Length: 111
Image (cartoon, rainbow, N blue to C red; front, side):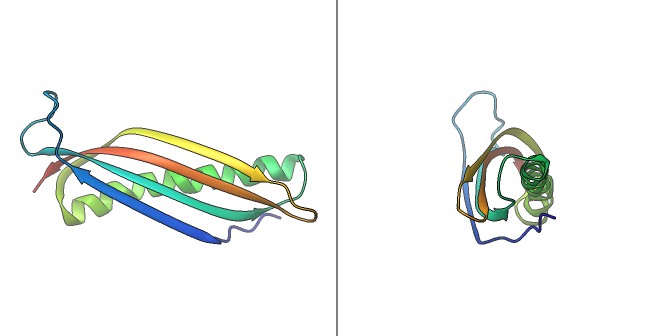
């Protein structure tokens, strides 16, 4: 059974006002990057597929909760504008490692 354990976790957030015409004066885009690795099952079986799905679901959960964090701190409104998800696997002799990463862009209305 796959156990979700974070070995490494990195979150980088950038808040920048954009000069693009499709943003109102009090709107900004917030870019968040998340990367981590988790132990995964060895091989290419069904357990490996499920482990990768669990890792992707964790990233989607982070994206869902990010708007809550933004509303609690700097925003009155928030929506996910785009999201890129990467899942890779490093092969090892007895256990593979799943490396997941995501880049998310949120559009927020500042308080």
